[in-house]
Length: 165
Image (cartoon, rainbow, N blue to C red; front, side, top):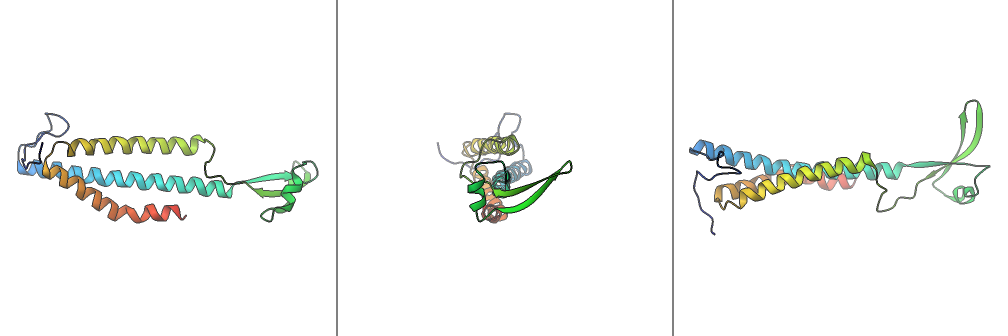
């Protein structure tokens, strides 16, 4: 197989076969947009991951000062703070302690379900782009590369910034 430059190469099915130079250009523009969408999906996943890590870092637990034996450890924690918790007119002395943050967070539907959905859509878009490249049409190939370039140019900096949130 080798690359070729025909303007009537089918894309995804026989019914999607450009019949003119304008239709071929439209197909190439579609591939550029599809590649940009792939980069945008990876950026959205990076933002979701950063937001989940931010939530994990802010997670706090309350230790009742007079009733929990683990309170000794909590009271020696420099990141914890004292407070009074009032519920139904009863006041308790409490200590608010930061949760230990691990590199692997526990499973949460609110975090893992959107992450899985985005990666499933990204995989589908990636496979569609791969199929376009596998036609060996040079225009389709260059369109996918152009879309990857434009997508990275537009969204790449947000992927880096999302990690520092």
